[in-house]
Length: 237
Image (tube, rainbow, N blue to C red; front, top):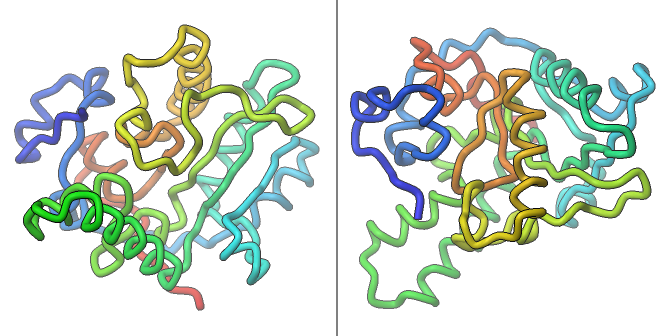
């Protein structure tokens, strides 16, 4: 289980190199100040193609149906490009989602929320909400994916086959925790390859999801003890 700290003070008492093992709750992270720098969203696939760097984009079927391209804020997109360049030969980043429309966030939140209600009928509404928000942000607040600075991804071989991370991306399970101990040596190594590739370029991982990284959003600001996030919610229909 991931340790959720009750206050920012307690969270910041952890040295930055140890914050990767703990987190803060949804209410704390989404109430953190935002001073949006109004940076534009850019098409990540086109950016990579222009620089002749490979990337795979495989959006969820609901996103694929509306043919939405992969967008991130300009700085986040360029940092992701820099990260991709550092991968060992024969490995490619595979992104599932970047910027996420709010309508899709609402749909996914409700799906996971209902799954917890069904699985744990005796839990209180508060606990159900808290458990749900360990895996997806409440769309009524400030969802990270709606900021354009957050994305979900994994690593594949050049042929597109995903390397073994122990459990599939977007799985609702304790095994989704980045540093889960119930993994094989190879699975741990694969997760650390992704982790180090992204964090070395300034991205922050949410420890409950091995695939989730961000730059500029509220969680990134809290992790780095910044006075405010630089990316706020963007609502594009």
